Length: 412
Image (cartoon, rainbow, N blue to C red):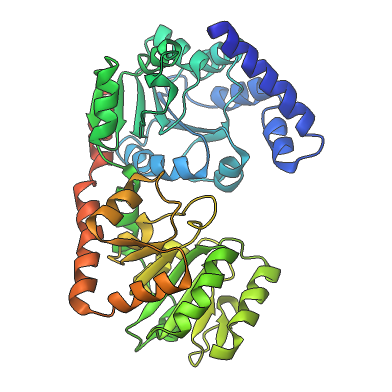
């Protein structure tokens, strides 16, 4: 099976090198890995020979955000260690290549036997931390052979994954390379135990620690604050797509909402202008143009603000659920906002829990959305929904500290 896996890796390399001739993201993937040995050697040689190394690996931006609380906690407690952060995807590397809490940020080389051994021989990590879904056989086997303590954090496992199938022995061998697997829920732990993987701890989701920390320290926004002042019914729309917006417009018109903050998934000038035209009759302002307090809608036409704007909300609508899948629901939950989204949410444990507990509501059209907005006008119903999302976060906080208990043993 390992032979088939290695042939697949080489096949993937051939395909992506061809794709790089036409596709910008593939081009970044290939270019970012060129001469990686020389670049890694140069970086490591600049460090003190006695330096200890903690290596974190995340597939992309979402996984980085899950690993981030652990990275920053480790950095705070062990400032003398070198922290190396690797990404598989350009969408993670390009956005976080200047992240200040890592000493080296680079792409993970393709998972060939030679690459894995060369990477580890140069880096010599004292501990390795993989985030959520990353399973690279040659790297994991080499880490196990070297005796390097290796963790998987914020992991979620489902019955349909290959680990639990008849052809799963190869995949299960990868799991055996981890010294400890920190999973988000008890179902994942039970699945792993059913295939005799015992080094498992139910720790929750490290993203919960991250969003709760953000919620505790969000500053006042000088544009949004004046826009919503005096308004008790504010809807924050996060990462909306056209399908979401077409449902939102009529539902908002028929509701008692006083203000709407909408952050489209694609905040390009054309897309922002399209939204502004749609809601012009009710009054609209762009965030970049300042606060027009007489407008009902404000379009957030930049990136990076959304997670701090939920502090001004009363209710959150999260986009993507009418298409490929919803975006982040933990961020609004950290502020106690009841959450509304479309039916494509089942891949996300927190969203399923929010729905089951009565803190989130699934809608498929404007009529259903209007009905939910009407329900949330009832104060008792609203408070019950708000407490439901907050209680889930409270129950699932503390994952960072559980992981740090293991890392402290390594660091000391």
